[in-house]
Image (cartoon, rainbow, N blue to C red):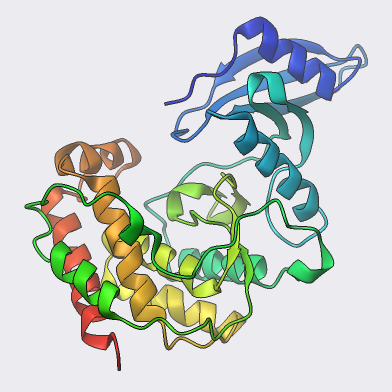
Length: 306
């Protein structure tokens, strides 16, 4: 968990972003894992007020990367925050406040997934050739999880060695899809909602350039254990309607995404599941996570190479 700068620094950054205003109040925002987030309300003598977010990263390079990308996204039909200020010294950026909260209990799941899929398709349709995105890394030559140090055997996911072997043996051809902007971590927890409508996509520090299948697969793996296998197909169907792409290598990237999920879950399935209890999902348990990921993995292994 990343902590924001001290209160004085947070206030100074907010006032720099909104000149002439005075800080009325500030409060920590929950849910931030990869970066610390502090909301700050700034007011003026004429009665106006505006709220901004001071977002702090572990490294200055991550803050700068996210700030540069958000400057580009402002002009697109992508629900992202307006960047006001970059403070390299404190690894922080000041963003416009976007209303909404994470939602893991949507009233209409299909509509929820449709909005997510539509937004992901918008991201993948940004014409990377129009902008200088050289500050973003390129990914996709192989599954990055295979390059990580081999973890200890995870008893919760006994098929992990088989997944690694199958991916290592698979001859990944050149990407059949044009490289696009990838969010890098497009999962339900990085979407904000208000009254059932998607208001924002947040946390862009993992953005990169590559085959859209990489992003799609990662979203599918997350949706699988949060909402179940049927939701994966609903989400993917909505995405196809917005952006038809070549899916021949989707099973490969599904398995790569599953390896990432296994790594993030680690051996603490209980703690991982408990996080969602505070969001009304006591039905997400170690058992359901394992079951849903197993079905996702089995489906991908069956299709790999076909």
